[in-house]
Image (cartoon, rainbow, N blue to C red; front, side):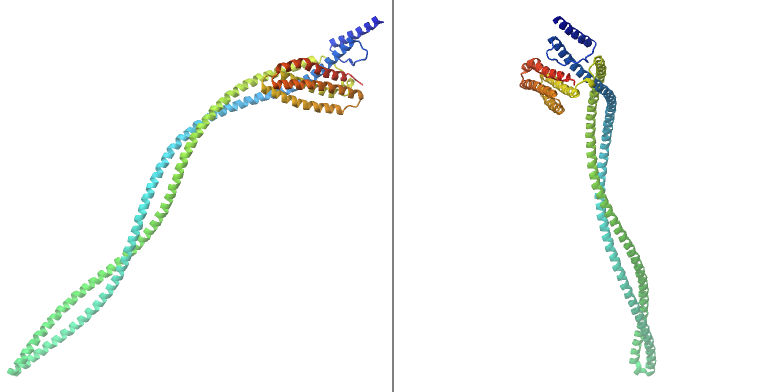
Length: 488
């Protein structure tokens, strides 16, 4: 009977090993009470391998798809980086050209600034000359106004002189009339004297005295007549001179009138010239102020362009450095792209290898198989984080892995809550309780290892990881794999 049982156990073990050798892990490996240790150990081994293959299968599938996506993205990034590098090369060349143009503009601005300075100085001289000339024009206008007033006074005086000349002519006419009258009287007196001489001659001795008087009267009459002739000649001379003076006065009046009119026009022209010069001077002063601003601005512009040129040169130099760095990065990206393509081929090979193993279909798996697979991924992810944490020696790296550990713990808590919410059977609740207890035991060791790493106790953490940490983690995983074999 014992030999028969041994033969049956042998056949069972032999059959399972043959299936395993062919890659078939679809057999049930649920533990049976009273089962021999060899078969129990074999089932436990198969459960672990099935769990491992399931995780590797899922991970390799996800890795392959992600690597495909990463490969496509890497190819796209490589093309984009090539375009960016070409653009940066063009930008560097454009920066260099811009620097040269800016320097050329700066060199051209300086002569313009010098020219504007000369124009400003010339304009200032013109403003000063215009101011002086405006003063002279103003003085000339005043003098012309005074001369015009004098002309107007002369014109008034000439009118008065003309009136006086008229009065003089009238007086001369009266004198002429009186002279004529005196001449007539002298003629009559001379005639009377002649008659008196005749009568005196007739009277003889008695008329001698009267004759003497008559002769004297005759002489006086002759003298009076002669003087009257002289007076008439003088009056004629005065009249002729007065007429000449009148003509001169009329001519002077006309000349003064013409001069006054001319002076009035000159004064008007002076006033217009003064107004024009005032406006021109104001405009030139405004231009002078603008030139002051323009020269200051051109100097500022020249300095700014010079500074801009220097900045562009610095940017161009920096862009050359960036371009060199971009070339290095492009080379690195080419290498990374090749590595990604190689990793994609490797993930495809891994998927090809894993596909050789046969696992139970979902119809013949546990109802919580997917949820337990999710937990298993989270748990193995935590284990990987702890391994990386303990392998690290840089404090920054240690802290970084510690933060990832905290985030993974939150993810595991969520996973455990979702798994617990789906428990319906008493057996599932029992396994879940065992899983929680095993994981809590691993959590104590995990937290201790993390604390040692933060304190710098690297060796303690490493030893705990490969001993108690590994064992407690394996116990939790064994509970999960055994749970997944409980197919109802």
